[in-house]
Length: 375
Image (cartoon, rainbow, N blue to C red; front, side, top):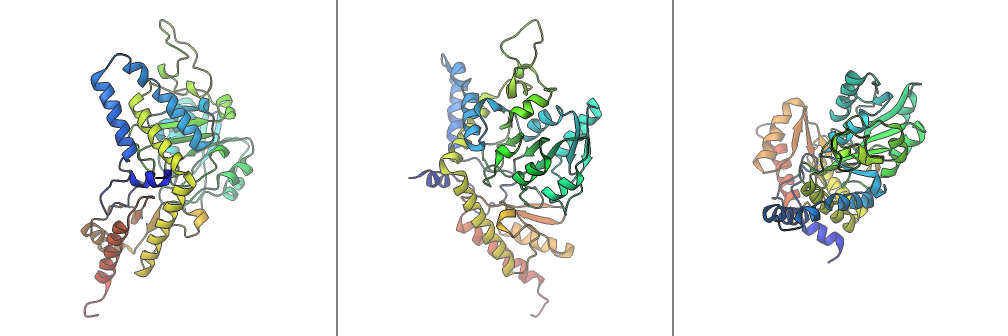
């Protein structure tokens, strides 16, 4: 069995699950890792703690293999927001960011501005939530020192052009929220200076798992404001030392070693399967969902162009039709996210024909409910 086949065999969610953009049910590899970590914690055999401490090194190696950053440029974080906070609070100068981003980014920019007065958000006007290199270029100012963006927009599923953004911002820092992209699209991560990602969505590693990757340029320019004992350069008592050099200094508490082990297992599983191969499978399933929606004229408002599309398909019926669509999906056991008048569907590489069949039945029921009586 090759790596992709093993990866696909690791999906165990019930039929009808199309909500990986919200939460990814744990993979078989992560479940096995979790069982091993719990056994070590339960038995506490001699040397177990020392062996567990190696999980963060394993995580760094796995994250480096997937992102293209070096091992020493990776630091564990409890989630995406924690990694973004570490970066944004360290910025001096203006941060160009859209207020329409998932709240983690604009909230971090506002909180950092309120607390430190060393940075301030510069609000980016977007094209219906889409952040493009041209829009960024036109809105850069003399005070802009960093640009923050989601690699995939959580509401629209639009894939940001990270390489294009890098070209237009020059030497400014590029801070990227990767949680809706890593494990779903094959992106040029090293175009960014900061990549923050949690493991609870497409990576299927569960909550409490995440990492931040920082380029040498980011480490040299960012101040590790939120560095705590997890960012100490060693076991230090009776004094408060300077943060550890490099990305290691951008950490607040001690590493959750079992969580690091789960995330390492998920990243290793992805890398063995091949990021491009996994992304291709997800793209195929997203295209199938678009076709099913088109069969019943359900309005698709997410990108249709493959280069702009990730694993998210968004349907936006008329407000008076939303209840009918919601009820049809619920009655057929199809799990989705419904937010702000839109229905977000997000398949993964392991999404089955049975699940797509349930979706088709739900959409047909929705279409039937909309037909005038007697027709």
